[in-house]
Image 1 (cartoon, helix red, strand yellow):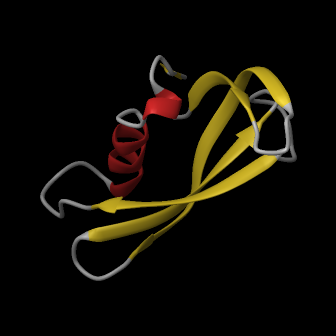
Image 2 (image 1 turned 90 degrees about the vertical axis):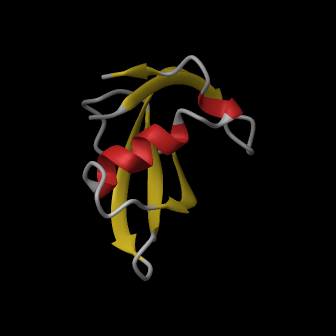
Length: 85
């Protein structure tokens, strides 16, 4: 799973239909997850052009942590309109 959305990084790089993948997920206690969001030019790119750190609440009885991370990202203004890929 990943998200696809056009973005402009803090360094001014603009990427059309960039591929954003949750990586390096870790549990912080019983109800918080921390993760990196790595952005790639496409799904076949081997190197990311941007990495951002995120954290959100985690429901142990909910879906897997990675799915919960994506659901959280889609609530953020910068990922409004992102497409699941």
